[in-house]
Length: 107
Image 1 (tube, rainbow, N blue to C red):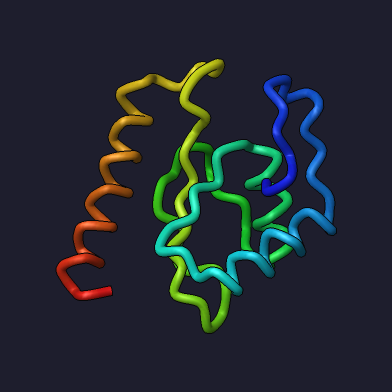
Image 2 (image 1 turned 90 degrees about the vertical axis):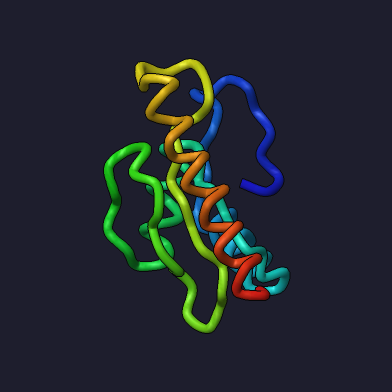
């Protein structure tokens, strides 16, 4: 989350205000892609926007904010977990493909 930089995931405690700030920032900047990396961030942000929690490293989540073109992805943190690196690489390639498709469409 914006404003949270911590290498010890036990210290990550995103709250409602963090989610609200991230939501507003995404609305204001309209990035092409947002990647929700950390499970706690994913859980709290999905709850904040009123969506169900997907399984970890599920990839494409969709466009979660009404009237905002940003596409959301859920990818496991690159290291420090039991997920296979190859599974994470597949998801990052999906993000790359999504961006290439947007580029071809002129967005």
